Length: 621
Image (tube, rainbow, N blue to C red):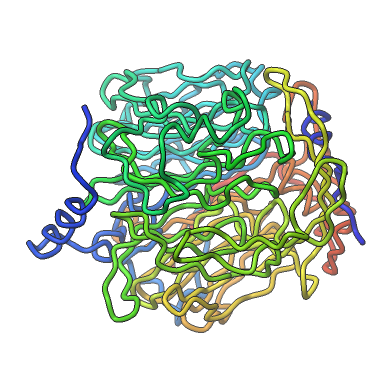
């Protein structure tokens, strides 16, 4: 059995040095009124056009564009209009933004913001260098990434690894404000893309593996002032739970569950960070996001349900007050975060049109929840899994297989999916035209042994030894088209390596994604037929975007660059020499050590000569 290149994930980390008291029923009535009075449905709203101003394309997070000039018939003829080196090595996980005739790209640490003039392809207007504190590189869990920016009212806003948030004038490249909200010396860093709702900049933070106490914050868009902060663990007042909080299931009801479901005061280091995406429903005026695993991977050290780790929250963007919460994995035993995006869509299920959010969970289940109430509408597997036999729609609880529970000092073997998840943070896309979701996925299983660990501020408290290997079929990744109403796959494309990047769909019926083995691909959204495969200098860990250029013609863009974790599957970081913590320079390995030890059958790519990450822009000839 092939082992993970780092036998202990903890060793790997160390070695790399006014409230709304409306009842729940009233929320539903407001939603019904919004629809009946002519408000646009989620499907109608959640599509982009000429611009791309937020990570999910729109605040609903569908990553779907109504642009249709690039079609299944002509996508194979795409040519590169220009490429631009970011001047930065490491994992480029953020998608570019496009506003008017300017493209904005945020790099991994040192988190520079580059403005590209689309009227002069390949030319930069300016580069903003925020100069974040270098020590933060050694105090973050999982690579020195950044997942992108958001644009509103003339400002480009994004997070810095060292705990600051900056707003930059989109025309001049000058800093408008800078707000310090997190302290990396406690293990809390920032790398997530914010979402902007009216005048609020909303985002989470990273560091569950470092024993932080997760939270989500809102800053004032004009000034950067802190408006609210909602913790994931602790007493109700600090989680921003009050009488307007109405979880659907009994398992999530009660007082101060964020504290009483932990032993002693361990909730203070309970993790449950929100390090990926926030989505928004303008009809209900609610934001949605998920929380990560509990801080330590050793479940025996934290008896109880450990709320609100591995939980999906609905909150009011103005105040942060929780409307409902649904814990997907009580007392998580497997590092099964709930941080995948919660896409806001309307689906007809059982002949009834439902307002829902759709979450492709790390644990392999596709959760569909009523976005007004938190009721679980469906929970069907979308990948190979064996840790549970299903999820009850009556109780909301997973039916866990006892033999797959993990314990301190005990090796539990053959758990699927692995701690990397069947799907993780990589953004999916939903096409209202095909009624399908598309996303990159992983096909990995694991052996898991929980270990005793002590808490030391700003150091890992992981406490687990993990060995991972390919799942059924031997391929470690796949690109999946999934029918959420039928609860099954429409088609899938096997990939030799995990797919660590997000997806894009368009009204013309084309889907786009990139791979670790240096390919940018386009497929027929109905059939999965490969229509385009472009060779790149490095692999892809980001999601593509599409937009209209200054000439009104459709373009598609993707960034390249791999870091320590995703690069480990593809011969090492690309470009080589990426820096994680202090003095931790990683060369590329032409042997593709990680992929080979995982049992990959595909030959690793030759070493890349690239010295920088890139953004590539394609157009029709």
